[in-house]
Length: 507
Image: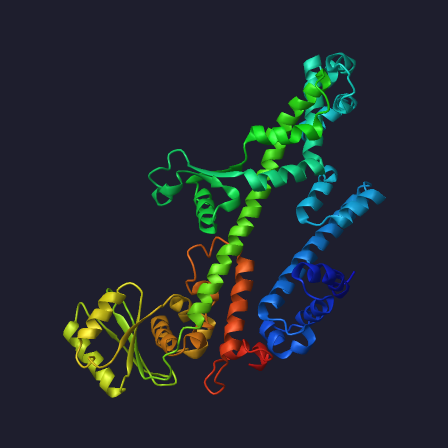
């Protein structure tokens, strides 16, 4: 099935989930596949989509992507099952109808190629028929039945050896049972507790994580920032994190599904259930719940980052002013750059407010007069407050506003190809200074030149899924540029490239 047909097949599912018509989803998907951007579709293809807004179009795109990923995994599993001779009509139907990736993997689990497990070794000793007899719970005496499977050459020297092997096989069957896993998955999602403990010997080195040295809370409601912080502490080997529900409650939940009596064979199954839960099921479910909580935390954090980026991009521009831009530097000196009302660099210099205050004052005064500066922009990096205080007391700045500017990402811009193309003959520090001044003039026009992840949008931006983050931030940039519009006479290539209908080549 090609991508177009696959997308069409998913349209009904997406339309139902998002409460839209199939036609709206089909039309939007077709436009997205042609390369149209979300703002372009929202603004210029209203007749095709039924006037869907940007949020609805983004939701369609994201859900179609998830369904395509699910379908690709489905096809891979069907191919594997067929190649290994496991595929039956019933199994094919189960795979095709699996609604989620987790349930699809549950169906595939019993047939997935395995490494050698305890159950594998028990099967090699010929103990699978004994396991089946006990698991059926028909009233057989397990110890008497086990006597028929003694084989010292195979390593089954006693009844206990035979029963141990049979329970290993039963434990694996329980772990691979789709209904059991689905029931336990729901229980984990509702009742699991997230716990973090300090790793042995890390009490001093890990002080920044001290709030989480002995922490626990329901995993289902743990906020994004705490999940990401604890995961970071775990990656740095400072914290140990577990996500588990009460074991007794979990076993009580599973017992009615698997235990069908109180005879000796059922007691063997109960022992196998305990082993399966502790050794296989709980670990598997913890891995799943970790991924689920991480995805939820990522989504919440990315939403915050996108909101922060939108606020930065849409900050009110100062407009065309003659600006003296200053990049603070107490030790190496402050780089200053004079810009005209179009942001063109006129002159640059270096001042040393602490080491040469009088000379710095004369330099600033001369630049202010020569270029008739209307506003001073000061980066908010290290030394920013001291530099701002110096400028406010320097001669002839009484009537010129001094404004602090967020300089996050200025160093990234200064070393980028965009900056090298703009100012091939300038030092990196001067390029960054020019960027600080231009940000005050027009934040949107300047910030689009920088990778959104480098602008300083949140504390945990490097801990979330980077592909999802990039997609969300790119959506915000495109949305903001198209909402504000551009001055065609002043817009940079980078800004024009975000305009719906233009693209990089035409820009």
